[in-house]
Image (cartoon, rainbow, N blue to C red; front, side):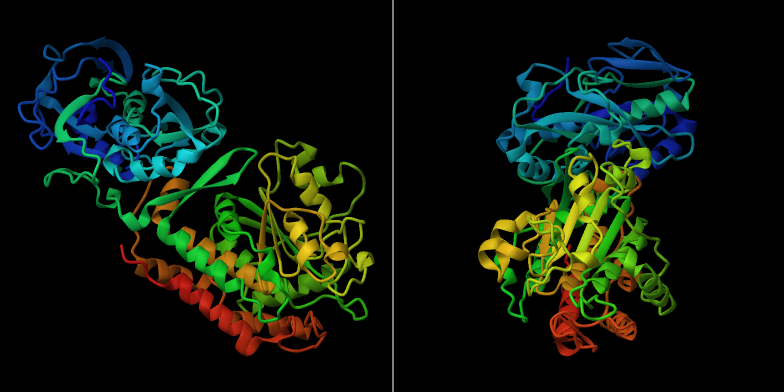
Length: 610
C-alpha cells in the first residue's frame, strides 16, 4: 500500500546492500545529502532499527519490496523473510519526501498527487550525483505542482525538513533537469498541473535505486517506489526533526531559520525560479538602498523598482556566459567622448563573474575598440582585473545580424550568451536617436547594440539587465513611463529599449559594484548554493573561509581608485562636468565614491549569525 501524507509518522526509503558495499554507499549518501539524507545505517545482519522504530523487522514491515540481482530488478515481493543470506546485508534508512506532505497541506499548499489519488511523479534527470566508490548514478526527483502564489510557503515548509529532502532543487521548466516530458514519469504516476501551478522538483530517495542499478551488486533490496517504511518518529509540523543521537545525519543538512529560502522568478522563457536565504536577500536589499542614494540630485529614486538588483544577481548566478556592454559618449566635443561612469562598474562585475567560473565578453563600439583594449590590458597589469576579457563589436549588417551575433549559426536554440548586461550604455530613444542628459543627439558615436537586447527578448534562455542613473541608458525602457513623466527632458531622452531587469543607482558604477557584491552574497549563501548544485556535493563552509577566499574578488576603494586613475590617463572625463579628474558624474572619488564602496563592502561582509 502506498504511504501518503495521511501518515502521522516519519517515513523512510530503504536500501539493503551487501556489507562490502556499505562504506561506499554511506560515502555516496554523504556526498549527495538532498536525495539521500541518511537516517540510520544498520549493523551487518541487523533487521531492526532501534533509533527509528521499536520492534521493527525490515524484512516484513514494508508492503512491497524490490529484489535486484547483478543490478537488474528481478521481482517485487511482499516480504524479504525468505531472502538471504541476510547476515551479510546492511540496511540504509533514508529520509522521504512523503514526510513533508502533511506539513504542506497544513500550510495551505495543495498536494496534487493526493488530490488526484496518484503516486507521486518521479523522474530520472540528466544531473549526475557526485560519485563515491562503486556508486554513480543520475539524480532522481519528484515533481509536485504548486500554485505560483504559494511557492514561498512550500519552500519554507520543506526547507525546515532537511531529513525529508529539504527545499526544492529546481522550480520551473523541467528541461533544465533534462526532463523532456512530464507526462511520462520514470517512476510513479503522472500528476497533472492545474491552472496557475508551477512544476516544483525535490530530490528523491529513488536515486538510491538508480545507484543499485548502476553499481550492479550481486544481490540488493529496496522498498518499491511509493511503499515506504513507517518509523515511530512523529511527523511533527511545528519544528525541524531532531534526529536520533546515534543516527548518521550529516551536520550540514540541519535547517537554520536565517537560511530559510525565499523564492523569486528570474526568467519567463524558459520558466525559472531561484532561491536565496532570508539573510542574503536582506543584505542585497540593503545594497539596493545604498546605491539608490542621489548626491547628484538627479531624481533617480523616482525610477526605483524593488528587487531588480536581487533578481538580476540571481539570474547572473545561474548564467554561464555573460556579455557586458558600456560606453556613453556624452562628451561629443572631446576625443575620446566617453565618460568615467560605466567602465569601472563593468570591470567590477566582470571580475566577480570570472571568479565564479563564468565566461565573460566585453562588447564595445567599433570607434572605441583600441582604447578599450588598452584599458583592459592596463587593468590586468595593475591587478584590477585578474585576466584579459575578449573584446568584441557588433555591426548591424542586416535583419538577422543580431540573431547571428547572439546565437551559434543563427540558431535560437544555441545562444552564445545567457545574459546581457548594459551599464551606463547610451540607449536608443523612441525616435531612433541617442541623447545625453542635455538632450544632444550623439547617435553618430553609438553602434546599434540596442538591437541585441531587442532580439534577446525572443530568444529563450537569454536574460538582460540594464543599469542606469538617468533613464537614457540601454535597458531603462523598462521604466520608460517614469522617465518620461519624472526626469528632466524625459519625453525626449527616455530609452525605448527595455531589459528584463532595470537597476537604478545614483551613479551607474555603484550598480555594477552592487551586482558584484550581490553575486558574492549568493555564492556564500548555503540555501542558494544548495539550489544551484541540486543538493549534490555540498560541503559546509564557514563564514571565515568565505570572507578569506572571496574578499579579493570584490570591488575595493584601492582597486576602484586605481582603475579610475587609468581612465583619466586615457583622457576619459567626468560625465557631468567634463573634468579630466578623479571624479564621476561631477562627484569626486574621495569622499563620495569611496564612501559608497566602503558601505557596500560593510553590508556585504557583515557576518550573519547562524
